[in-house]
Length: 481
Ligand SMILES: Cc1cc2nc3c(=O)[nH]c(=O)nc-3n(C[C@H](O)[C@H](O)[C@H](O)COP(=O)(O)OP(=O)(O)OC[C@H]3O[C@@H](n4cnc5c(N)ncnc54)[C@H](O)[C@@H]3O)c2cc1C
Image 1 (tube, rainbow, N blue to C red):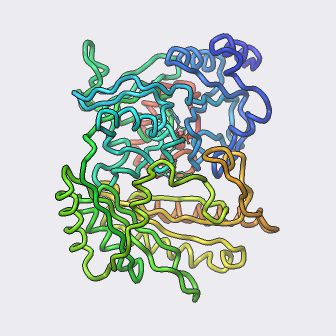
Image 2 (cartoon, rainbow, N blue to C red; image 1 turned 180 degrees about the vertical axis):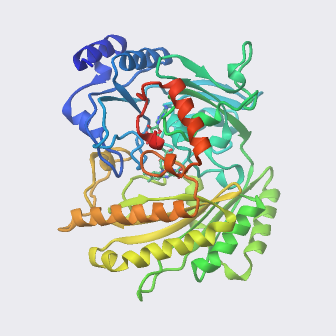
Image 3 (cartoon, rainbow, N blue to C red; image 1 turned 135 degrees about the vertical axis):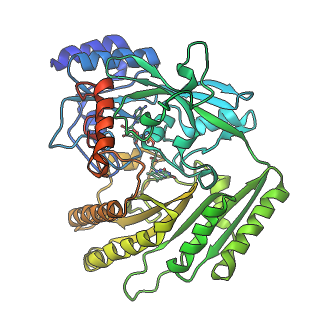
C-alpha cells in the first residue's frame, strides 16, 4: 500500500478540498462518542454515487480499508477501529451525499442519498403531507439516513411502526469492488424501488450491518400520510415494577406512536424521583387519536397517575431540536447501552440492570457516577436502555457533533478513573443483555454479534461478507467480522 498514491488518486477523483489529511481532522474522525482509535490516513467526502464508487475502488485496489461515517453520533466503535487490530484506513464521510432523489406521493415512497439527514428528508416529504413510517431518531437534525439504517435506530413512530429498518423498501449499496448493488424491486430490470419483498429479501442483510457489507449510497423508505389527530399523556409510577406492566400493555395494544418510560436508578437509601411514562397517540382524526389515548389510560389503570404531558408535547413540538447535545442537562458525559427484548423478558432485563448496578454501587457512589433506565416500545418488542452519567473528558465530537455546547461541566480530578469504571459497568450491562438473548441496534465493534450468533447463521453471514468484500476492507471488525 502506498498511502501517498492512494491520497493522490482520491484527490483526483474528489478534488483535494474533499480529501482531508491534516492531523486535527484525522484525530477527530478517529473518535465516536465513547471510543477512540488510530487516526485514519485521511477523511474523504464524496458528493455523488459515482464519486463514491470510484473512491472505494481506488482504496480497495490499494488494500486500504474504508470506514463509512454519517453524522458520527453513535457510540459503539461503528466507524472507529480498535487499536489492536487496526489496518490502514480512510474514513468515508457521507454527509455530502445529501440529495433527495425522489418523493413519490402516489407510490408513498421517498428515495434519498445516504448522507441526507432525517430532518431534511422530513421537510421534503412533509410538503406532500407525508413522512417515513419511522420518521427519525431524536438526533435527526444531524444523524443521516444511511448511518441510521446501518445501525438501525428507533424513536418517532416506533411504538406503532417499529424501527428504521422496518420502513425500508430498497437500497443501493457500493461493494468493495466499487459496484452498486440494488435491492428490492429497484433491482428488477424496468422497475423502480417501491416494494421490498421481490424474491429473496436482499435489503435485510444490509440493514443493521454496521456498514460491514458495503457503503449505502441511497435508500427508499415507505411513507405514510401525516395523521391529523394527536393526543398525549404522561404518568408517574411508584416504581419500575409498576411501570413495566403498563408499558408492556401499551406496546401490546399497538395504539401508541411513541411510548417511553424513564426514571433514575433506585439505588441506596437516597430517595429518587418516580419513574414516568410518556405516550403519543395519533389518528386520522382528533377523535380517533383521543379514543386511542382513552384506551391507553384504561390499560394503565390505577398504577399510573396522570400528570401534565409536558415532555411528549415538547418533544413532538421540537422533534429534531429537543436534544441539543450529547452531554446531559448538567453538562456531564452520558452513555447509553441498550438491548431489544421480547415483551416477556422486560422484567428480566430490569432485574439484570439492578444486579449490575448493585455490583458496582460502591464505586458509583465513590466516583459520582449516576444511572437511569429507560424503556421504549419498538413495535412488538421493547428497547431497554441503561444510561450512565459522569464528569469525564468531553471530546471534540461532544462539542461539535450537534448544536454547540457552551460549557461542559468540569471533569474533576478523577475523570480517568470514572471513564474507566464507566467502561467496566457498560461491559457488564452488555454481557447481562447478551445472557438474556437481547437483540441490538448499533452493533459496531461493541456488542457481540459474531460470537452470539448460531454457527450456521454466522457462517452464511461470513460467506456473504466474502462475496461483497473478499479482502475485508469495508469497515473491518464491525459485527466481529
Ligand atoms: C443525544 C443522542 C440521542 C440519541 N437518540 C437516539 C434515538 O432517539 N434513537 C436511536 O435509535 N439512536 C439515538 N442515538 C444514537 C444515534 O444518533 C443514532 O444511532 C443515529 O441513527 C446514528 O446516525 P449517524 O448518521 O450519526 O451514524 P454514524 O454514527 O455516522 O454511523 C453509524 C454506523 O453506520 C455506519 N455507516 C454510516 N453511514 C453509512 C453508510 N452510508 N453506509 C454504510 N454504513 C454506514 C458507520 O460505520 C457506523 O457503523 C442518539 C445519540 C445521541 C448522542
